[in-house]
Image 1 (cartoon, rainbow, N blue to C red):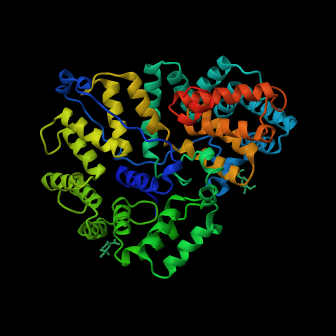
Image 2 (cartoon, protein in one colour; image 1 turned 135 degrees about the horizontal axis):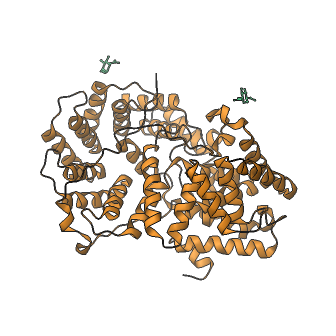
Image 3 (spheres, protein in one colour; image 1 turned 90 degrees about the vertical axis):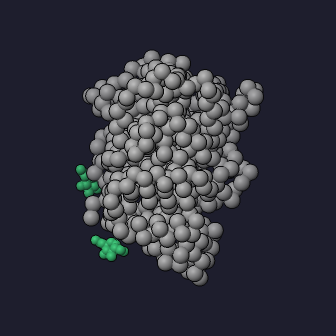
Length: 507
Ligand SMILES: *[C@@H]1O[C@H](CO)[C@@H](O)[C@H](O)[C@H]1NC(C)=O
Ligand SMILES: *[C@@H]1O[C@H](CO)[C@@H](O)[C@H](O)[C@H]1NC(C)=O
């Protein structure tokens, strides 16, 4: 069977469910307020073709990603090339704090970059940007990121977009982030690598709440073992939670679709509504590990909705909207979306927004669509941010506002598979490999991830020499370390990280 993945509905419900796992550790949520003045009446009458961005799930390549080095069964062929050999050496050097080895790795990267390997160019840009085994040089960093972006490196595209964003060049930033976001949203569940990576702030976790970090010790984790015991004793809620953990690869466990399906099915057999809903979604999309079966999907969703799981109505609406397994019926679709929306189903609001945006089964009304998107966004429905970003970007329905567009696109872009480094960063950190964790967070920091900026800075400050910070030609001098930490805190602070602000006295 060919794995087919991804619908926005499933993904976002998963993201929302995810946020329940360790809310205190998550990056702050964005709350969006749009005033009357932001609306743009004039443009709303212009007919606009709205391509169905998300109806065409695809596998998102993330070439040059460092993930295969951590999860070799992800992509065994990929890790043989000279690029991966060099990155692997880079990582070992960071672990061991071996500057000579780092210099060797950097030289290999440079040589591959000069031979035109875009991924090596991207890493070389990173070395120049951070001042690792190279004199810090932002112009060179930018230049290599440009080359790498042209060669298809998403890591560099992220870094470039963030650079523009940071410098207030919002038109360029919005354009790049829009492209990344469009690609990224399709990948939420298409990646075999853990698709949804929780941004964990380690300075909250490591010191104050060791238990939370312990939760990332995979199957060995005590609370996970407890959960398994409860499930084996017949607790349907526990079965569901284990299913989720396996499905998304949470808590340091690898993604295991077969186990996920097995636990979710067991829970659903016991009438556990969340599981019935999730399985319904999976059968509706043919996602991950099941063969698409609309009949079965509708059965499960109906059962879930009968238990007042209103999100299920939203999904049923989607089936009627598209005529999947049923006769196409816009009236019924809208009725179901409304049922979901009336019961705080963010997806219902989102889908109503789409219907009004496109004029499907209703009279086209962009203003109303935007109001629905806004409600959905503020309930944490990320795709709604994408829709709003587009309105701000194009000036259709909302007054053109490029800084806002860039910020909202950025939010979505950061969900792309390139965020998987945060998983390996955290794992390295938990295993006590502070040097590697620092390198990984530094790489993400350059791509604009606020949490990674703060984590990298925190490691530098807390672990000093143990961070194996690599400077221009050897381990960082105190001055280099302080400069780098300050720059990282500053960037995180500018992005609204209050802890960072307090660290550098911006609060
Ligand atoms: C990569 O290395 C593995 C193990 O060393 C080997 O099995 C595989 O054939 C290699 N692939 C390529 C493309 O060289
Ligand atoms: C789809 O699900 C229905 C209801 O559960 C079942 O009767 C049918 O055999 C399934 N179809 C396929 C192709 O598996």
